[in-house]
Structure formats: structure tokens, C-alpha cells
Length: 98
Length: 281
Image 1 (cartoon, chains in turn blue, orange):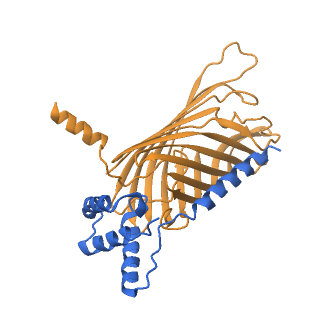
Image 2: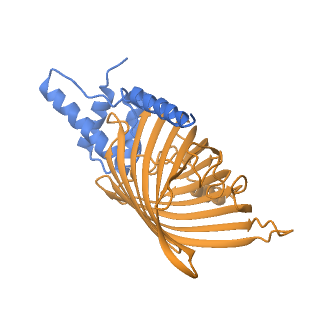
Image 3: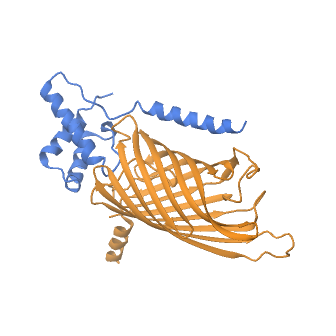
């Protein structure tokens, strides 16, 4: 009877994980091909450069102004050049507004 | 005075930025790895107490374990770590003919090397995942351990699941007929760790860790399946972080002839506390 406890807790845990899987870093969709490429490059750079050192923050967690300040601080530490920084910033502030 | 304050703040790593290490659990691993060229130092202290009770041969048993760990980021989602472990076990064996039980101390040391390969990110991808491999050589055993790590960050909540499999080659001494022989016994521990953390902000959180430990041996097959669970608290102040966890033994889910009790107190403890302090360079 008691092993049920293990399976119930595993089930609850698995359910929580699956539910939370819906929440991810947004993938940009734009009808403008140039804009789409720019946003995808920004996303790729954000994941590559930032997730190496810490958990990524979802774009909606900070205001555009705070992101600007955050990127200024992190740019040197993460060895991001100005062009890359602009692409990351553009991707972050272009997130779908809820 | 001012200079001392600045030095103290530097040592404590008071800063608003998040640095390399994002460890928030004491038992359960996350998929993230530290960046190339980064270096973390961690000191683990584990106090395990209460190795007494039904079926236990001990009148008293308490462990104090330490781990000194250095982690290195190698880039391309790979990190490695080297650590030195010490296990200090103070115990007294039950003896029905004795009126007092003298305590003895057993000290073991070991050296480990671990590798972690991040496969996906817990925020950028649907689920974070990583593979982990650890090799340990100790004064009384050799151990190989592998983990499959899953985690997912959802707003202010983090879920993590580890499936752990190991191979332990342990030296035991047994009487066989008239002779006493030293033998190598193979054990296969299988462990499932699951953890949840709620973040109050980027720098602190409180959560729960649950561990299910199973042991398979050559002689007895599946010996037991023991469930542990308890709270975890973490604080991250810039480069410095602290993780604290209490893990009481809850119940033995798989009773056998070698582990017939509701809990397994000859191998595991009643309570297990762990404190991890770390600094990212």
C-alpha cells in the first residue's frame, strides 16, 4: 500500500513540471523577414550569452528601462559587443505584451 | 573603519547582480552550468544523526561529513568539479551483555571528480535537462554515479527532478567457514530526488526536497526504498550563496527481510541536515 505514496508524489511532481512547460522564452513571429531574422538572432544570443552563467529571466519580468540598465552592467562581464547587445535588447523589449 | 566595512561587503559579495552559481537546492541538481573560465568554491557540511532504533545495531550514531568542492566552467555547456570528502562517524554498538557502550570513531576520506553536460535550458526550452557523471575513489570504496537532471523555472517557482543510478564497490570482511576473507561487494543505489523552490525574489527562496533511496545488492536484491523529505532555504548575495536543508527520514516503502522496519536506521539516519556555502570567482 505504502509504495502508492511514492507514485502519487511522483505524479504530482510530473504534473507540475508538465504544466510549467508551457511557460518558455517566447519565440518571435514576424511577417517582416528582416525583423524576424533580427529577433531570432537576438533570442539566440540572449540564450547563448546569458544562460551560460545564470538562469534566464523572462523578458516581461523587467521594464524596458531596467533591461537597458541590466544589459549595460552585464555587457562587459558577458563579453557582448555593441551589435550583439542591441540585438538582445531589441529581442527582449519586443516580447508580446500581455 | 570604512575600509573594514568595504572589505566585509566585498567578502560577503553584497551586490545586486546574479553571478555564476545558481544553486538553490542542497540535494537536487539543476541543469545549469557555470560559464567558461568561471570558478566556484563550495563547502558542504552534513550532520547526520539518530542512527538508532528498530533493527539498528547502534546505541548511538552520528556523522559529520564535509566536502570541499571546486567547480570549473569549461564552456559549451560543460562544467567539471573536483572535491575532497571526509566522513566522520562516531558510534557505539549495542551489546546486550554490556552495561555501558563505549563510543568509537570511524574516519573515511574520498576524492571525486564530476562532469555535467547541459542539454537544454530551463527557461529558453520547454524543459531544462543535463547529464551528470561522478567518479569517486575512497578509503573503503569506489563509486560511479550518473544522474539525469530535469528542471523547469516557472515565474517564481522552480521544479527539479533527478534520477540517479550508481555502482559502488565496497570492501567487506566476512567469515567463510574457518577463514576470514576480504571481499569486494557490489551495491547499486538508485535514487530519485525531486525538489520545489519558491523564490521570494532573485536572492532568496524557500522550498521542499524529497529523496527516495533504494539499494540493490548482489546478496539480497532490492533491499529497501526509503523516503526522506524536508525544507530547503537559500540566500544568494551576489557572489556568495548559502543553502540549508533538513531531511528527516520518513518511511521505508519497501520492507524486506534485511530491512523489515518502517525506517532503515542501520544504514541511514533519523535526521540529516546540510549546509552549503559557496563563492563564485
